[in-house]
Image (cartoon, rainbow, N blue to C red; front, side):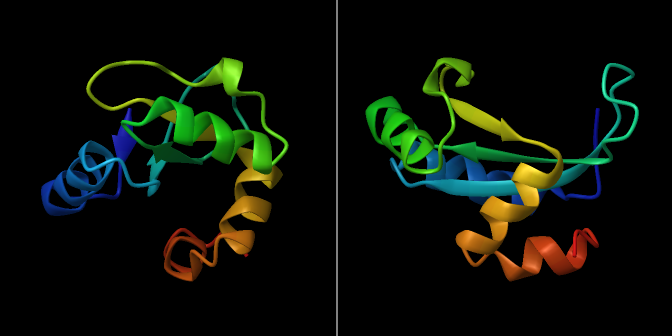
Length: 100
């Protein structure tokens, strides 16, 4: 379940994904399978080849892309989420969700 984002942010992410851009959406999240994780970043792109290359460039296995049309995405969690958000200069995500 997602918390901490509004419809406008979600719609901007969906629009960017639909245009074939690499887009980031971070939100609070609760899943009993991951009791120590409180946020997730969805890295989306409708161009699955581009998203696969992006994953590989960050040492992530593209096999774990959620290929759910129309918004394919890769979920970033934990320390890897923080490291990649830094690398991608997504400072607002890091500040807003207190990931640093």
